[in-house]
Image 1 (cartoon, rainbow over the protein chains, first blue to last red):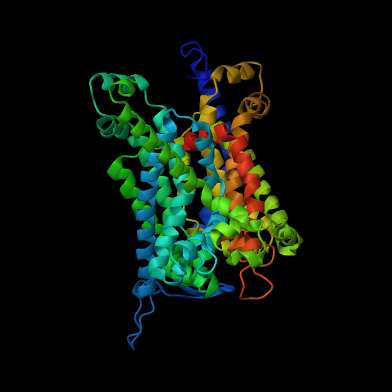
Image 2 (cartoon, rainbow over the protein chains, first blue to last red):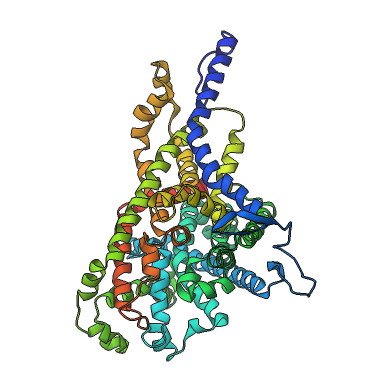
Amino acid sequence: MTTNATPKIAAPVRRRGIEAARARQAVLLLLPTLIAIALVAGYPLYRTIFFSMFEANLTNPDQRTFLGFGNFWFTTSDGIALGFLQDPKWWGAVKNTMLFTVVSVFLETVFGMIIAMVVNSAFKGRAFLRTAMLVPWAIPTVVSAQMWAYMYNDSFGLIGRGLLGGQALLANTDSAIWALIAVDVWKTTSFMALLILAGLQSLPTDMYEAADMDGATKWTQFWRMTLPLLRPALLVALVFRSLDALRVFDIMSVMLGNVNAASTSMTGYARQALIDNQLLGMGSAVSIAVFVIIMVIVVIYVTAFRVKFD
Amino acid sequence: MVLKRTNPTLYYLQRTGFYLLVIVITLYLLVPFFWAVLTSFRKSGDLFLPPAQFIGAASTFGNYIDVFANPNFQKGLLFSLLVAVGSVVISLIFGSFAAYALGRFKFRFKSGVLYVILAVSVFPQIAVLGGLYTLISNLSLYNSPLGLILSYLIFTIPFTVWVLTSFVRDIPGELEEAALVDGASPLQTLFQVLFPVMMPALVTTGLLAFINAWNEYLFALTFTSTNRTVPVVIANYSGATQFDQPWGQIMAASIVVTVPLIILVLVFQRNIVSGLTAGAVKG
């Protein structure tokens, strides 16, 4: 639908004038947003890239020495490795974040699909389940992390003491990462289920009636009809969830503390360098690495699956 | 149902299996929250009890009384409210201007602007943490709610612009054409014609942005030292001594900050689902 009703042949000059005026108005309307984005996203991102090539202290950024890529990779003449890419702890954080992302997003998609299919079918108590679905999603991440930290506690917890008989799940980073995945899956499965449910409800029902008539089993219907048709909705949900999972920090920070968060989350590692150790240059370099890793994954997703956002 | 007549045993077996699945899902979704609510009403001495006795133990409001008497928590609630409302109001004003321009106007670089906004909304927050920290301390906004409001715009503005744009596109064009013919300026059209129609969208978008701002942790932890928001207060809640975690109070504080959100989400259920899918699925 075009908003401009002026006939084209009658007054071409005037029409161009109106369009130019509309374009100017549009720019004015966009200006506050663009200025705000430039101030809180553009400028800080530029500063982060800038400082990633310097050695600088957070409290006194003006005193800095240029290092080039020394924050990323540098070996002194004595053979001491200073770059974070040479730090096994960084690669541990990368490994744990990837494991966290792949496993939790996979489980959320599967559970979200199951819950969405159940809520989408007719049964008594459907409205209640639909409402119950929103509860974990509405709970702040920090709160759900504390709730689960309490359940994992080895002397009081429902899981830690009740199910595992006093095992401290969070004490060891290797087992802790699985405990953290469980928290994330619990919290965000409902988000996945909501998005999948919206997709399911837009599918035509007569298609399924036809498939029933032709004798296709529910199983075949799911793999041959539901899943292919849900693909676009599913992929967008998957991209957004993966991005969220890759920048995870709060769950680690609350349940393991900031020190252990640095060895389990990429953001945690960057934040420790930047804020706790006050190394503005090093922290910025790590932040840029996290940024690049996430952007590369987005590009892979978008090109591999041809995700369309609009 | 054909199966009910041809093979009643299999039919009832299937139905039973299905309802078992429903029960398992409901328990999975609600038990952790239920357990937190229960704990918030138990004395700290009863936390050691085995589950069956713990459920039956005497209830107390003590944890809630302690939590509300805690000055850090009181201040946290105030600051959280201030920061979330501040950033949401700014985002809704800026965002509705931008959404009107993006949804209704034709101009060069429109898809470029849309892509920039989408890119910022998927930005990892850590990428700007160092830059924002120096910006905020240069503006002397460290530890001030204003600093947090400013930094929260990085995720509230792209979100509101994105969702509102898809709503604006769905508004029939006749409304606005009538206003244009009557000689209304774009701002008059926006405020007097589109705003009333967009009200449900503004409420939904505002609510979702509010939830995001209310829950934010990384910036709040980094840009404040004493003027904490509630997520940071809850994450660092400590008891009388350093060694015992006051779980009852932590759970009570958690319930206090969660229940308003759950009520809002349940009241606006339908709008929320449409708001979430507007940006993502329908697109």
